[in-house]
Image (cartoon, rainbow, N blue to C red; front, side, top):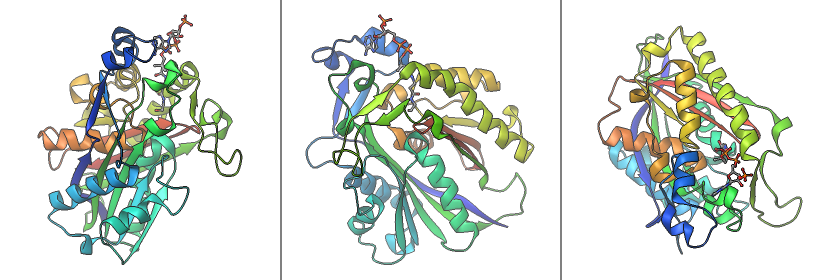
Length: 323
Ligand code: UT7
């Protein structure tokens, strides 16, 4: 059986760090409120010349280096983003060009904060169907560019960045002992579309728009939706919380992360948390967290890793993989 196995990882962050204290100077907020309600201490904000495609390309280059591959080895690029450089062409095609890749194909995945989970699942399908042997899966965002900086209920929460994985086709036995993606579970429900959305777009206002969120409403649904897809992955694979080496959640809010882990019976020592460093970077948050934990030696080859995310739409999903 063909499995989609992680061969390399990489991350990229803008140069500028903005702390909660710095935000206090321009927004009616406090470090105490932000830390207590979200766990966020700082975020990175893109400056001039830093875009979703430039950050995505930098993360992709690092993932290729880490994998010991060159762009000639890649067949497909999938970029999960809700903050593309342009309405079209796809940011993935922009990144393809920046990397000097003129073969294969590239496309974007739009599932907001669940984008990276959707992208890994889609890459896995392309690999297992034989359409691609090696895929660069990127999550890249510049949410700072769609924030309403006068709205304290949203602007303190998000940050910019990018992360990438190289997934490669390898023969497995078809058991849970295989390395690679073992199970993916994707969900969406548009009845919640007005709880977290951008109030502009090419076909409605002709503008880019700003992020709007009913935070409390999103919070109310988050833990239930996250645990639902993780339990689906456990059921599909016959695994339990005890088998998990690392839970790598979407990094929106420390309280949601802790609540989900507690409900699932996963001890907090097995949860990778980077929301304090990066804020919520939407589709980039999981590959950024994976890169931090793989680089510092926490996630090791053979570890069982659960990825999960929930976001605008609502969309939500989980991927169980062996690193
Ligand atoms: O990534 C996609 C998924 N998104 C999420 O997962 C976000 C989910 N939601 C959340 O994480 C939380 O709901 C928030 C962090 C957004 C808000 O936390 P909360 O505990 O739900 O706070 P709240 O919205 O109930 O607001 C509590 C109070 C309000 O004041 P009153 O009405 O009680 O007087 C707000 O006006 O906190 C006030 N507030 C702030 N105060 C200082 C809201 N934003 C701020 C702020 N600084 N930045």
